[in-house]
Image 1 (cartoon, rainbow, N blue to C red):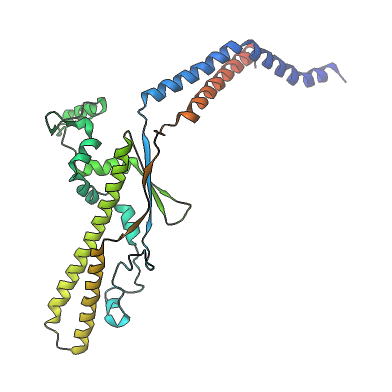
Image 2 (image 1 turned 90 degrees about the vertical axis):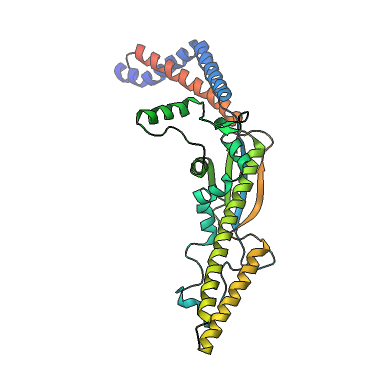
Length: 311
């Protein structure tokens, strides 16, 4: 075999040996990089306020069975004439559970939560002056920067937190996750205080349910008032009997609403959170930071070795 070919075949193994030798010679630098990555990760974790993760699981309410609310709209017979107003299936194109999920972070639901001043004070504590008992501009650098930019533009610089601010907060920090790909949903919220995270999820679920229940009651009462007004002017006996049947079933639905069973979303698993803060989780992050420092050190040593060899 020619010497040139043999030298080419031996070049990779020789280069690898030189690389391993360089790494062994630079073990102090690799250890330093590993410790640096570990230290930076620990410092970053100390700069971040740990949070508790609270979650609950909800699902559509059942239509039948002892634990069910029953139909969300009067299940009228075909003769009752309900199909005249709603063509096709009696099922809603957008179900009540879908409305529930869409309204969780909406302004109407936030308006109900705003009435709870204790919740608002704890949620926007940086803008609440407990000693003076009033709202004040937040003192954080981000808030001051926003107010300064609005002042330069000639806009109003500040207003007390309201339902719109609460809705934005929920859109940012509330997560809705699917459970095993089925109809159930997990609501996840993180906060520095465990009891407040649980409280917010509880109040949010109750407020959304109450909003949908009140809307259903308002619609049913409006329909009953309209139909009762039309009954007095109808002489046809069959037509009057149909409308009377509609009013009767609407009254039954109102009675079901007053029972207090879950209307749009059934709370399958109440709010719960671990006893210890779990975000950010230091268990995987600290070793990952050390490995990142080691990887950076290996890259630097390999790059220097390649540069010296002229590769």
